[in-house]
Amino acid sequence: MRAPADSSQTCVNPKARAALIAASVLVALGLGVFTASQVYAPRTRPQPESGVVLNQPRPLADFALVDHEGQPYTNAQLQGHWTLLFAGFTHCPDVCPTTLSLMKQLDARLRQRQAPLDYLFLSVDPERDTPQQLKKYVTYFSPAIRGVTGTREQLDALCANLGIAYLKVPGASDGEYTVDHSTALVLLDPRGRVAGYFQPPHKLDTLASDLAGIVTSGT
Image (cartoon, rainbow, N blue to C red):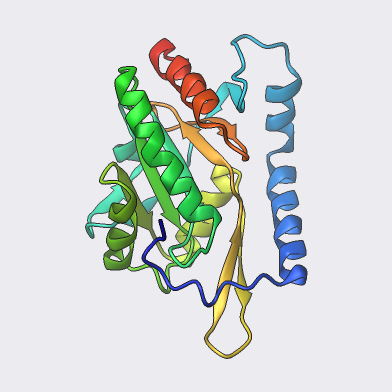
């Protein structure tokens, strides 16, 4: 099943990928002390098989985005429920469609287990991903997925706070580009804090079981 997006502008530049890795390293360094305290401190809560849950969830700074309905989306919309976030762009040829398809399957599995999540697709391509484009894209996969985006400055700040990275990569001709980006799923708790990370490759059964356990236990 193919997503409704033009993937003709998605060639990957090795130099750009190296720059994305460098950007990711800078993000990691900025969060280094915190991450070390989470990963290497004695565990106070069980760890999922498919990812890492932080011992102390990390608050997000205030942000202001817009969703695929053209409505404001802020920290307030993260309150009171668990959220699974993925950052990407609608012209992505592979990992984004695969991950949104995974979110659709997770939604069905977790509803059966009485452990519903909200699903958030954060576009890091604001030049092309208007609310209209986002709505067309995310609803193709599932009405349970909400698309959001913002200005470049807003996205830079939020992604750094989330601990993820992205990089705009020029294409072969003027006006063409793709976007390299982190591929982790970010779990946000009912207080809108970063609670964990899940890196691909994902196994649906294992990930669904892990998330259901976290959501139903409240940890």
